[in-house]
Image (cartoon, rainbow, N blue to C red; front, side):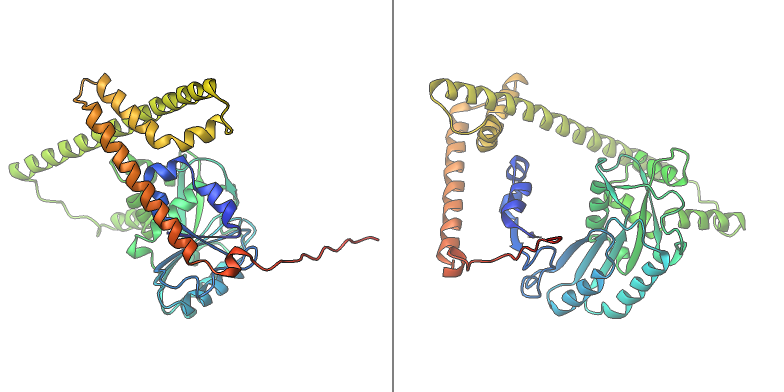
Length: 367
């Protein structure tokens, strides 16, 4: 995974934290820096990249043609998912022109375009959402009469899930929030969640069918050509369905228990790290704050939390062997990290170590 950012230092500070370390993201995450603020990655920077998730802020549809041009020049790129945010002032006619442009110029890769109005800070899955094909939007109000805003987290979820949805290829869609509990979008999304759809299945259904598909199904059913009576299931089929339902319930219960255990482990780990910080600070002054200390010792804290949790649950714990194994694992990880950093330094050029000085022109007006 490569994050293309304006400033690598700022990008690392925002993305690399305790969760990134614990989930293994650090082992897969790398960074590239744009040539100028807001610039797209170059063809060279996309070398070896097969899937590209691009974000365009402020509803700047003019950048989409640039994205297509760069992606066409990068032979390795086969999938491009583009999220345009802050597009509440964009007209339907503009969106349709963009769709025509992408259909004609995107020839070497599959693409999905998702356009949303301005972002808000609500968590994902906080309310339902609607998705409409660009070809079906109203020219004067592509987001409907009440534009509103859209969850940043939800829009990022939709665009990343789109990469895994084959039927989303070639789609240009508009996404809107549906906070009204009586809306058809809410009815569909809540219904999918209640019967066990995961987020990928939910997004796929809304992208490929959504409210329009549901209304078309009802219209066809009304004409009397949609449904035929299904044959009655046999006893064997009923038994298999019951077993499958029981397995799903067990799996859901296990996922819920795992999530609860994970939360409890994090609480125990935080308590241990805070006690460790206090213990060490009483002996001598520590030149870092408590939060930074917790981030540094988080792996050890989670290990200690896991030991304590299993002890409280009455599970088998071989503390001496597990501590010895943990130390060996940490030593191996440190050695691997040291070697990786050593290789990076060995491959640095003089320009990387001592980059040329840059000057910035500042113009003062009104003088």
